[in-house]
Length: 76
Image 1 (cartoon, rainbow, N blue to C red):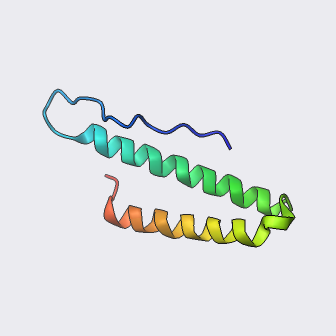
Image 2 (cartoon, helix red, strand yellow):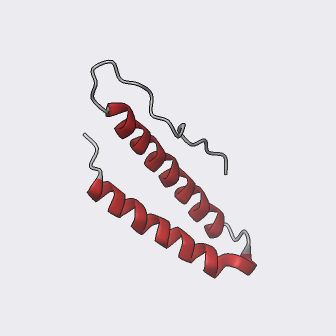
Image 3 (tube, rainbow, N blue to C red):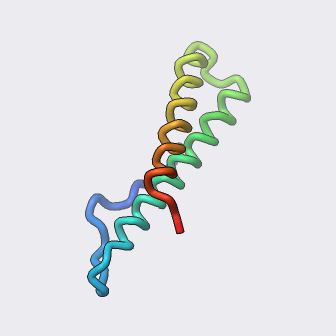
């Protein structure tokens, strides 16, 4: 599961607004959604059967967190 997180410091914006921070949030949410899908595919293929229940619960919680974040930080 290879993902890279945006830097902890938002890029400076010449206009004085904060779209770089919103862009970082959108990037992070997109990466987490990709990681969630990857995890779900791995579980569907039968990987890590000994941890399946815990990982499935983690996948559901990640999905709920992403849904809440999308409501709180709508894109566009």
